Image 1 (cartoon, rainbow, N blue to C red):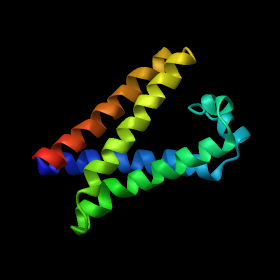
Image 2: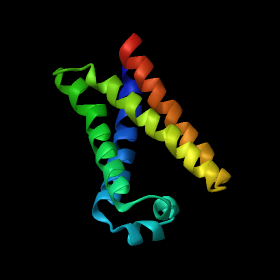
Image 3: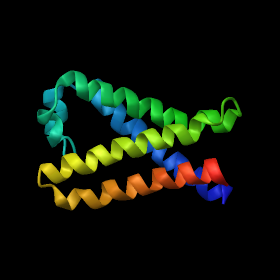
Amino acid sequence: MNIVLWIVQVLLALLFLYAGSQKLMMSQEAFTQTPMGGYGSDYSANFIKMLGVFEVLGGIGLILPWLTGILPWLTPLAAAGLAIIMLGAVNTRYKRGEKQMIGGVVVFFLLCVFVVYGRYFL
């Protein structure tokens, strides 16, 4: 089970590091033009940047605390925070009528919940 959790953690970390870095490095206009960033026009540039910071920190938090053994309780906490972000993403995609994208976001939410459960209870 530990190997499966590590695989999921690494994949989620890569996903959130990539998504968060896009939000941090691109202007709001450029981000809005990306295939997954159409919702960028619905929020302020500061909100998008803040979301990017949370995603990057969450991606780091999925790996570093558990790997180093320093404050390992931060790993399930990071996964829980990212799961909350994914719930917000489901809501945003639903409001925008992007129902075809909701399935992927739900999968990421469930993977985050799996990490929370696996690292906290197992």
